[in-house]
Length: 349
Ligand SMILES: [Zn+2]
Image (cartoon, rainbow, N blue to C red; front, side):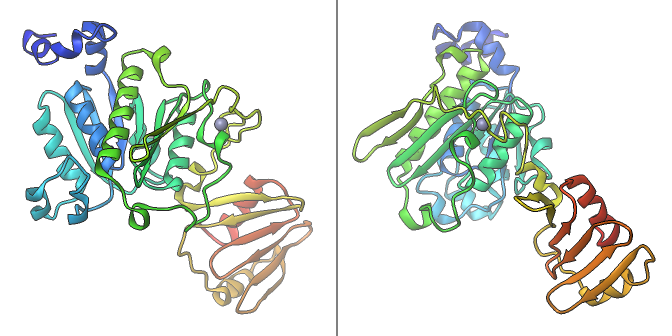
């Protein structure tokens, strides 16, 4: 490390657990921040200052006036530009620290891009505001053995949890599925205090620095919930929270990642059938499909009405029902791959 960089980071290097070795590790590492709102702003800013060598910040939104109250990476000049937050974050993080590589990526994180975004990342920081994306991060992180740090803020409350794949409980160990839409408060309905998000972002960045400098023994092992207004701090012991049959971290089933290209395939419980749900907004012309399918010699009994289309595979005990939104049920098999093949063959995907 050059003298100039040593000087720059000297106060952090003097902190014994980091030292020169830790600083080198930081500069050789890559952190991915998903979502650049209040928490993501705070943690990305701190990691840039700390000298994390490569910082990727992904966000799908444009900066809005209501963001300035808490999103510490942005100012009024940024607002005038009308640029996406990821672009502004890249510019502003580069001004904080020009010796690191910052990439601002304007994207909606989804099953088709998350693995590419996460490739090379040594840690993933959750700056999102929804469980759909968190479960997706969880799938990707467990699959690629990448530590990630869950963070959430609402009102004066914040939560934080480290997830080290294979060692600690993952998000699916704690929550079976995403909460129903509309059942959890959002920043839009419950408000949010800027300093609370800043605190959670700082705690998240601290945990990231521990991970990146190889100090896993010092990581917070509990789930933390803090209320900065009421001044309560709760720690939930997670030592027995890892599920024996967790679909993600035990069974290696990545339901949220498998929504890749939007297709969801599920074996229907208790029946010999598989359901296939194609990407949102798929529209199937049942009449056209019926006329196409009725020309195929291997199919029998092609029928349709405005609500569904049905047909049978000749000499096989399999029939398919297709709905106008593209959803299909393949009856007569429990085999997802067979169902998917039949869907591709007859419906197209
Ligand atoms: Zn798990």
